[in-house]
Image (cartoon, rainbow, N blue to C red; front, side):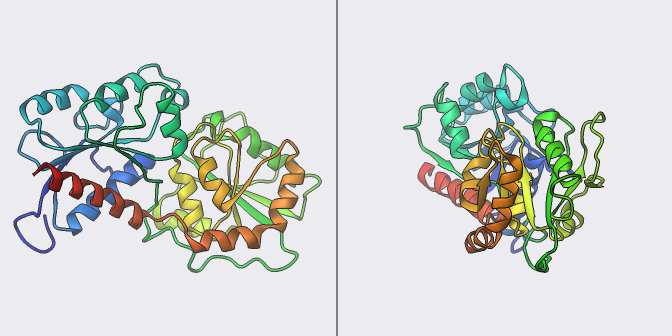
Length: 325
């Protein structure tokens, strides 16, 4: 319901319903977007059973949590060809280790008016396979909820204190970068003892036994942000990330980024706000530490923002409706 009037300004159908708790970056995206649309006086539906002014699609039915997928959307477009659609693409078969995602994305994308990719890396990945990059599209990087994820009240490390690295994941898949985190754990237990710390939030492979890392259970929202702001730097070695929300959460809390060269879309942000892990991890950590002030300054100049992310989607959908009318 609109905050300002009983009659909505417009109605948009979204195929991913927000869920309470943490269900990954897509759930955070949809939760923020729904709140932004409703605050702007719009109505959000999660089906195609009634008339709508626009449709916003993501996941294309591969997720068990989507309310409608490609088949339902195809039927809808046959009956309502003039209703504009925005297609958000935030994944691929490589990361998911699936075989149908790229195919379904391509099938859906043939019917949409505008495509949003969560990173340039992901756009280029799909362009090499099926996406026509001359079609209308935008890049909108993920942003975390600005009510929680911000740098205000962050720790200020004193000279001589160890640099506190942090990472967090809801998945315990080794591809989330646990091979690198394990190497950091080895270093802070040996040559970097007293010079660096590692905090790990969430889940990790059961066979991984930490030596010195400090661990925390899975956390979300304000509780998670509070832990992140107690640290100095974020490390992500997760492979083939299209556009990771966990990275946005760390960056928005004021933590420069140490990233793996195979981190996919994370590399785009890492080049702006941090540095890449080299083959010599110990040397990387030393250099990164010496350059922390430089990286922090760059990050605070223009950090990711959930509010800005939502505004970009909102403006795109609004423009699509105006052009279709």
